[in-house]
Image 1 (spheres, rainbow, N blue to C red):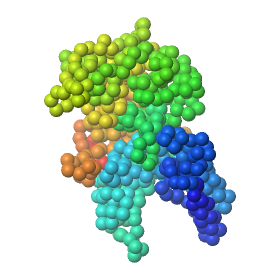
Image 2 (image 1 turned 120 degrees about the vertical axis):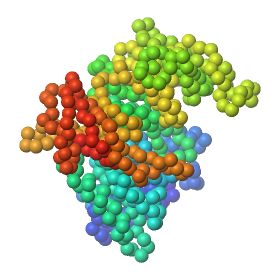
Image 3 (image 1 turned 90 degrees about the vertical axis):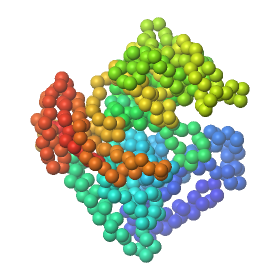
Image 4 (image 1 turned 135 degrees about the horizontal axis):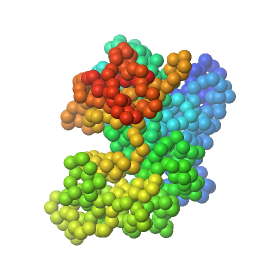
Length: 539
């Protein structure tokens, strides 16, 4: 917009609207990219923005981008009120700011694209997109790699898995193709799409009007601006999402600016999340209403005072751990029935924090320092120094409706994939979270998502579980491929079904009946062998 190019694009859109019948507009490659051109510098200086303040430049860029998107959207709606509008690149943690200017969202996410998306991008981003007021779809591609991969083609297992992942998270489906310059479509591509789309078409009676459920919400947090052009979620948010996907804890990701949190039983405050006066008021009301908070690291910490802004946090902040890495010594409560040991110190590769529990709080585990930080002054072997003295600081503290992590387990799990972080966090959360909606028995690469749907003349509510099975192969490539699926046996799950016992449980779409047993308020189902995407219905 600063160079006049924005006016040029708007003139083109006006010409298209006047000259052609238009169903909708898909504006590609739209994201707030800082502009240091001569025009951009003039605009920023006029607005009082210091060019060496990256955060101020980014905020200025976002404001300018949103203003232009609003202007362009208004032009389309003036000429073609019924047209669909989408700006590709706006599905980021900031997506709520552009929702008023679009008719829907599309999550571009080609998981086999090296160093771009991967197999966790869509499952994470969809958990926030589905909390907005508009429909969304997941956009994958038929390619072996990414766009313009002519001659590259997925196999059926890959596309079935990706389509199952998309609808399991509550999205509609788009599969991208790229036309040869001769203008001729490849029949093999559309045979592949016909197979996967045909199966989704058979599932439509269990998709239309179905809504994903969530018991936990992660408050979204923008990744600190780096060289990335498209803003992403912070490492702690992504790590929490990966953790919940692997453990089948049903979750959403929500904008902290949301008006209320009453749809959820527990909120996750990621490490470093700033809590202003407005958010503080909403969080205090949430706690007063019986809601629970899990606070990670420095979330809700005022950096100026070194104090938490929420009075009910069960610790006082002391200082960052003096070494990075530090070490985690779990107690029996954090060990539970896992392979963790109470006589071993587990390295924590990220920054941990020293805190002091308040009176009446329950503490678990112990934080220990390394002998020293590995610098030019201190050296040992190939990596970090071994464990040193105890810091007299706990790992996990609980009081009332708040659970505090002195070690940001989610961030560390995302960045280092250490099973010990998952085990400690899961044991800490096990007794803190309300009864889970779904309890699977199976490996972490079997993902379970729960929907509810009104059905029949009485509009009773049925529960629908989508199971997608991720079968990666060991390769020397940076991107895993799931092109050799195999039926997996021995899985089971328990679904919370309070009140009446379901009349029947079956597989969709073929209505194959499944046996089930009542176990308290849960219904347990031993599953038959399942492939890339399986749908179980309880009604």
